[in-house]
Length: 226
Image 1 (tube, rainbow, N blue to C red):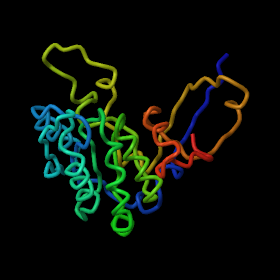
Image 2: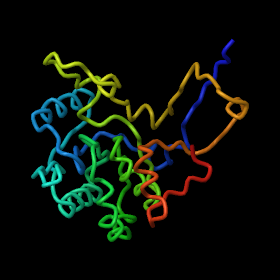
Image 3: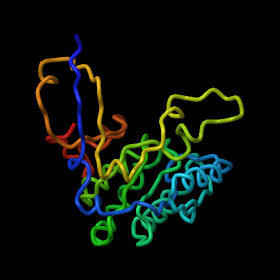
């Protein structure tokens, strides 16, 4: 009989400062691969139906020769401006892809300026792993490794195209998660160590990106992290 395991992730993910936020003001942003601009209207209306206040002022797509949304310098400048914006609670990435790791040197240059601004909650996965790592390691901010704004259950294509696995994941209820944590049920332990109680910081991410940071100044400290 499979032993039921319940994992509750609360304070290990979010600091007291984050718990006090209402998380209403969302800035959509893209700093990696080219995204479908025709989706933005639906993304914005979907988030607004979920009671978010959404701005698209940080969407600045001028596709580069490498298929990124812009040059490295422009993408970094745009992201830095969003991170410094006092009106924003959440920075939600439209898409992953590639190129995010190229922005880390630009972010590192302004690290001291970013450490004094109000923390933002960064949401996204895939290539956003590089940004999560900088936010977590260099600024000490918490973040949420969750679905990007253009691939989730609420944005499933209605043109007959078969949904991909990412399309089946619902948008996270950010306020509820920050207040109550996340609970997983019916997890099967695969070894003796997994049956023991463990505590630590839960990290998500693209393993290719994480390993690409090894032996660089951006290598994450993964001690007591899972």
